[in-house]
Amino acid sequence: MYIPVKEDYTQLWEYYKNDRDILKDISSELLYSNNFFSFLFSVFKVDYVYCWWWHTSILQILISKILRKKVICTGAIHMFDYTGETTFYKKKFLYRLLTKISLYLADVNIFICNDQKNQIVSHLKVNNPKVAYSSLEKNHTKFYSEVEITKDFKNEINITSTLWLTKSTIKRKGLFECLDALELLSQKNFQYFIIGKKGDGYEELKKKIETMKIKNKVKILNDLSTDEKNNILMSTDLYLQPSYFEGLGNAVIEAMARGCVPLVSRFSAQPEVVSKHGYIVHDINKEEIANKINYYISLSKERKNLLRAETLNYCHEKFSYVNHLKKIKSIFKDLS
Image (cartoon, rainbow, N blue to C red):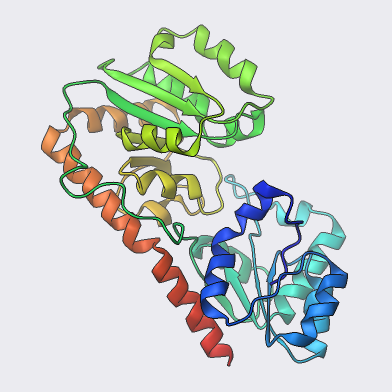
């Protein structure tokens, strides 16, 4: 497995944890490589080469093909932004060239969602494209039983968004539109939690909230532990992420796995992730977002609990580790 990152880069190394676990469950022996020289040392000992990121894996793919090793490559490629304007062809020439060659040479190219696969194959020559959704962690278990997920809705509705608080991410995730929508709600019986690490958009976000009538209803939470974050998500009713652009939307999957009903936009793979288990806004504006939230608030306690249970079960079925493992196993089997 070629991962272009050092193991001591903890956050990035953890990004690949699910794939590492999957390959461990498939293979009797798994060798890691994070640079060209370690790859040269290990490639003679393996039958298959699994690479992350097409543009950084070109040498590994070329050598593997010369040695007649089977190559699987995965990652994410963004062809367009939410306006339909191309982003891929604005990349540097070398990036585009290396990506195109790798897509053509790899024996299998795995994409994170159908939306991205369809965009790529309609504009670039791709050998054997497949889709394998990101999954919940291997040891992930349901946080609720069917009984435990029910809530007493006499108290406030809890609404949550999770994101890195940079200017670009705040804009891309539609956070300001969400805040403006909350001011339009017919009922003010809500609490809005914004969970995320501080970035260059943090101060601007704080200033905006301070000018709003709902400022006492909004809490920004930084540097939470995993357990603290999970506790908030488990008490959340609606998860807001009406993004202008996403890859797959792992944060939405994480929220749904904890019983949150998602509200997302129609862009990228978000409808593919949510399916019928949530709310999808056609246009990212405060009026449409507010209308969806008002509708959810108006539902009976029984209907809210049913939606939460259905969302939880759907997420654990579609994005389970077991299903992801089966998919990757079938890809290897087809190559053998």
